[in-house]
Length: 290
Image 1 (cartoon, rainbow, N blue to C red):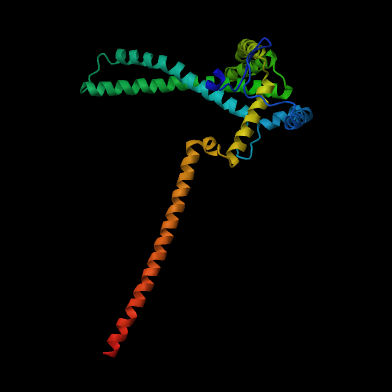
Image 2: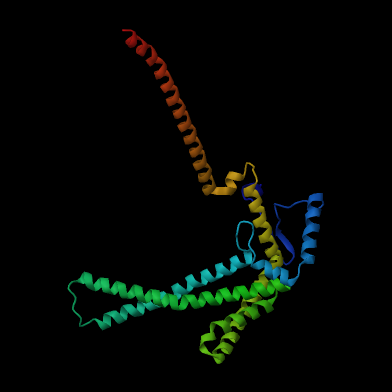
């Protein structure tokens, strides 16, 4: 009964025990499922590490980036936002205290001018402090995600090694402007943090019975299925397109209706001109005879 109320799309498996069964399972004995499985296995077996690595930088027919690069951009954007928050809040508080201590003996025309200058100084300090931390954290998170994804995609397997190597490279790149010694210390710190992140991530995958390879192919399969659903003409097209597609279709319908209305108006005007011309002919003949 609860399956009808709560639609379960994905199952949950812990330590090999199925806690929540998948409600959207295709019969594996069907000819279609067997054919798709054979095709997928053949494609996976013929793939090389460089093929998978080059596929990361390829775009599809809609000029959309790959899910791997999308994850890298998402990680970098998230790091930038978190860094702006972490660096901006303390910098604004420090600037607030410094502004008050600097302008104890200063005179302003009115309290509005003082508040305006205080607000400007605090906002400027928040932006500078946030950017100072944000771009570094964005670089680290983006580089860590990219290196981890690239190594994992090339090896076609996921382990703690990828996260340690990604943290090592990202930490070294983070400390690159500070010299070789800073690069070594940054690389060791990044490797330690990457190892911790790898242990947690791989542990969660082991508990859920999922691998990164499955997630990578699932993402590509979900994306292709979504594109097919949008392009196909079926009753679910409106739901797949969403509000933007519905508005676009409505706008096209309005334009078509407007064109039909204008065409009908032109036809009515032409018919009225013809009627007026026919009515005017007898009048001209009468006047000429008179």
